[in-house]
Amino acid sequence: MTDDWCSYVKAGGHYGSYQFINTCVLDLLLVALYICHIKFENIHLLFQSDFILNSIMNYLYANKRDQAKALRLIHLKLLDDHCKFKTSATVDVWSEAKDHLSMFRQLVCSKDHVEIKSIHCEFQRYGEVTILGKADGDPCLILVNTDGCMNTAPPLNVKDRTFELQFLLLWRKVTGKHMVVCSKLVDRWVLHGSNEVSDRDFSFNRANFRCDYSVYLAGYAKIPPGRKRVGIPVAEEGSRSDHGESVWHWI
Image 1 (cartoon, rainbow, N blue to C red):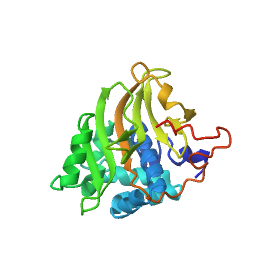
Image 2: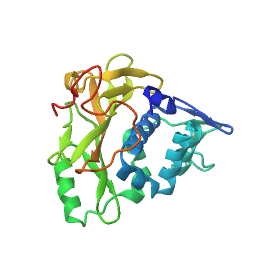
Image 3: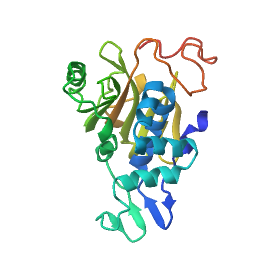
Image 4: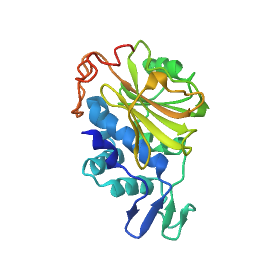
């Protein structure tokens, strides 16, 4: 995966006679999930256990963006002949981040587990919490739906650094006012809009979340000691040739 990772999902698209419009939120969420999918083995295996998510990731890996979107939309029943959202052959996919949380229904951890209850308590101060993991209660990915109510930078680590922030879906209040995704690669953050890379070296600690961005969805990955990471052929943390010691060692 190289710096052209953003090309995996672009605005719009079509499938058969259907034309997709206003796909921004869906596009950015797929970018964020795809990066997590190839970075972390536990998330990769979790998504692999769900037929729909696994198929979507496989389509993205094969550079079949429109098929990935179509499968998600079919799952949302937007392409169903009886769905009220469909008009003629144009499918308006205007949505909010929370509209896509149903994608993870089969992967949500039961709150009956003591550990899950504890994690939920840690995150619920930030918004509506969805904990994804295996049936045995081992969490892999935490999604926090803030619904635009967070105007400060979210914590980079939660619960004694067990969970590390991986992406944010943000409403950009300046320069066109649109949704963007802020994703962590290995040693840097990248800000990406639906049609372009806005910032290939986004400075998280200098960003003005009060004036410039509102957080709608945050994604945290579980990073236990020794957990294997996969798939990102960029500079390893702590060894960027242009920065020397990792810029993220301050976390």
